[in-house]
Image (cartoon, rainbow, N blue to C red; front, side):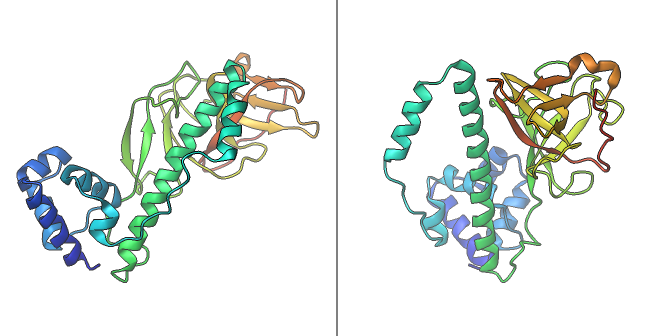
Length: 267
């Protein structure tokens, strides 16, 4: 669909829902002029906004804009039943980790789905990369779990920040850090940007360990033992060690994007 055709559909849906441009603008926190530009084809809302508009108008995004429907999954597969049984057999830390992984994967899947739909819309206009779309946004989580810890899961409070400028384009989410254990590379109160790149020794990452969220430098030795290190060696008390044979629940949620990889200082 062209930008003008998308705008015409948005105007039709709004009128059918009995809403004014002023009401829509107020609900979205946008100006009436912006809503008008969407409907006249002078601008294009991003996919997140299209989802919100369709929900506001009681319309289906795929049906309204002629996008192919996703195949519906079966109600509950044998594999899903087996996973549910395995979940019931876990202890509390194990169940907590499963919940964290599901929450993060649901966010990742939703983000990928929105990017795919946005690309389909823009490819219809001959703009494969959506260069004229609104800027991409990522969540910034700002509730720390404890001093030196970070919390990018568990539905914590967050806000959206636009990618670009000081926000790296490869970032998937951001976390505000509290505590001095990662100074001078990451200062108390600083915001770090995180992507899904694989972790290598020396990288700084966001980790889940037995119920805690931590921002630490990663090191795994040849025996499989893992050290999560504070860059501030005056705060070595905040280091964490995971023995290869431990029952500890450890998961990495992403690699912190830094200009240079900090030097490893193995105790």
